[in-house]
Length: 311
Image (cartoon, rainbow, N blue to C red; front, side):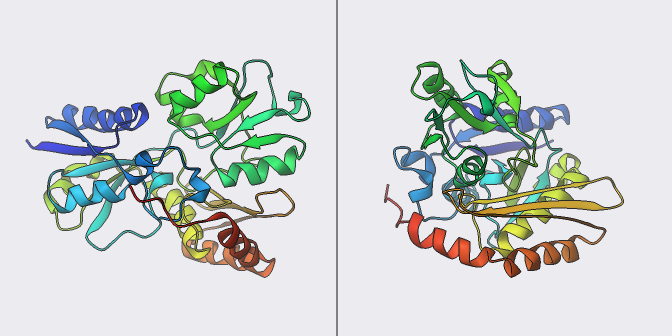
């Protein structure tokens, strides 16, 4: 049996994820320990994510620990994983996906429609902001950084009237009671990989990859890889106004995508089905680009992103 070292961010959610995978490994007879690693994204918590022009802000330092062999594997939320991994790394497993949807949280209001004009809604995501403004252009959508529990506390303190968070993270932390309802993917298309956990290892570490194989859920991997391929095809990272969601029934795959302007003035939506993942992604990409997705994203990148803060 192996003694495995897991690299993780220090937030409650990240540690839950690392210990969840660790628990599954213990059930196989292995021992494990978690090493907390502070990432770039953790060091610049006072800067809006949309203003940070760096890829891998939540994974870079953890990958450095993998290279240095201080850890054997890393557990990530798949929506935080860059669409392109360096050759020395691989995703050894993508676990069965939890609820991929975004959740609406509020103390006073039961639904998005109940929010009064000018209500303050907190989110750190351009993807959410773009789609929310299509539904409710009259809301004051404000940046909201911090870990899941920190954002919930800001809601409880009355800093905002409502917040939107990934349902899976709330469930994992036992904060389901704060959810008023889950947003249908037809209204708020999730981020690529949302709700899924990925386990990253060194490509040349065959033994660890073999030990992790039992964690890999093939339907989830197929769906998440479709979403990430679409994101890559649009040149996007995890902090751009792109939604991508795929699901499979074992015979065919349905792929939904949205590209929108942050002010809600324009949104392009596509949804197609097919039995060949690569062809399906290519078809959805072609439709989006024909309708002007590249122009929207070019405008977003030029206006929203500034050089990253050194930390």
